[in-house]
Image 1 (cartoon, rainbow over the protein chains, first blue to last red):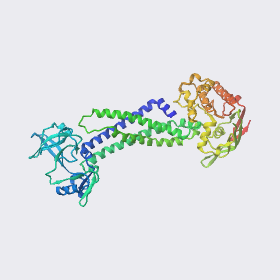
Image 2 (image 1 turned 30 degrees about the vertical axis):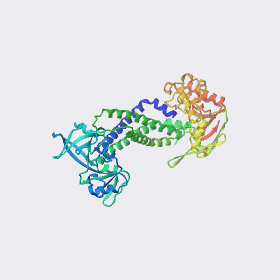
Image 3 (image 1 turned 45 degrees about the horizontal axis):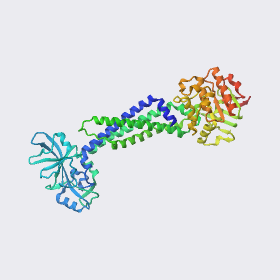
Image 4 (image 1 turned 90 degrees about the horizontal axis):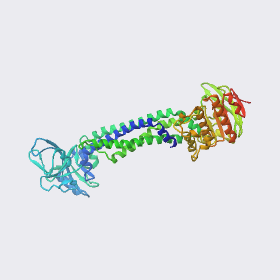
Amino acid sequence: MFLAIRELLFAKTKYILIGLITTLTVSLIFIVSGLAEGLSADNASSIQGLAADSLVLEAEAEGELGSSFIPMQKAKEIINDQEQEANTLSIQMMNATVGGGDKQISLALFATERDGMLIPEVTEGRSPKQENEVLADESLKQDGIQLGDELQLGEETTYVVAGFTTEQRYSHTPVVFVKSDDLEQVNAVAVKGESVSEGAYSTIPKMDALHGIPSYSQEQASLNMMIIFLYVITAFVLAVFFYVMTLQKRDQFGVLKALGANNTYLISGLIIQVILLSIVSVGIATAISFGIGALFPADMPFILNMATIVQPAIIIIVVSVLGAVVSLYQVIQIDPLEAIEGVAT
Amino acid sequence: MTLVLEHVHKVYQDGPKEYVALNDASLQVQAGEFVAVVGPSGSGKSTLLSIAGALLSPTSGKVLLDGENIVTLSKKEVTKRRLEKIGFIFQAAHLLPYLKVKDQLNVMSVLAHKSKQQKTDILAHLGLEHRIHHYPNDLSGGERQRVAIARALVNNPQLILADEPTASLDSSRGQEVVKLLANEVKEGNKAGVMVTHDERVLGYADRIITIRDGKVELG
């Protein structure tokens, strides 16, 4: 600690420069994480926030909500078999026009029992009461939809927006909750807690259904790939920096060893430097990322909060220390004899 | 403290050939005695000093510090002995560039897990009290070597080893530094060994030992 801190303060410029590079890569990690989190919510917040724990699907659908079809009669039997509360869920992607205009809006229709457990909390307006009334995600407002507006679906169906709810997006489109009474088949039965299923039907945890959402896995995989690369780059940048620093300081380490410093002391000094550098970089990068996040337009799928940051922050500190291991070996290898010049070896 | 080397051999393997750096070298240095080791380059002076300072282990023979044979100790124990019992002074001062003079001394207390008590006495003694808050870069060569001596004395070691301490100094600075060393050895009742080929400073030594081809010739 004694030496580590004094050296950091003495060689400010070097450490500020390397800290700057680390700060930039860490900021990028945070921003891409925020984007991944935002896209994930934009694609699946309605499933992630679904007031159920598991889904009963047709076994042949292999976990894909869209390929599962359960006749309404059978769905009711499944509901009756459950020990806990259960409701039907049917998802349909539709295009709607507003009040007979030309503008098309994509919607995800979630059909379920009108007063069932799957209906989310109303944040504006009121719960649907009339036959044709619906509850819609508030992101529809960005398309100019207001309370009381009519959504025209095809030739016959017209819905009236009675209320808005929040954080209900599916496949990058706003979710509209409609009633399922007159459907002949549904996609799934959503169940609280463990669900009971048999024969041609199988149960999956609700989070497993995310993989069945078009493009969900691909989007997350490509962003996660970027994040992993950034971790590796950060680790390598720090590893190379501390390796070169250690090589430069060979004679200093040699003298310290000759004077009686043991490996543990020298190594812990190095690790303290790496940890301090990465903690400061993470701190500044957090501020930068929140600042940039605030500048993004409201409809950009970007979610950054302390919960999103904690995990990558810990990973960064851990990989930085791992990166320094190469230098540790170097420090251990240095012979105190190097302090005495002219000794034949 | 006495330093005793008994029948020390050091053999280096140089490809297929063997190179004998020390051949049956024996030596005894008493407390309060300041010994100069001289000899042509390549004669084994530095090897002798490295073995006495527990930086190098001999091929055979014994090195006794206060009666304890340090040859058989573990690496960790040897490092501890260096910290507690031996003060090293090198050819160049080898100060850490990022430490002020007072911290050059404090680091020795930190390593020995001792409190960082005031080092002003020792610095005043070596005429460095006005340099306490300076970095090595701001010091003259002689001042740097005096700081190195102060650093070697901080933990009050009983054995002082100096490897050509005047090599980087001009003649008058060199004389001054060796005089200081000799005084410290006398006043602190320590054992002192200095390797040198600077004949002008031999007058400060109690005894001069010559090494030729790895053999100790007592003078």
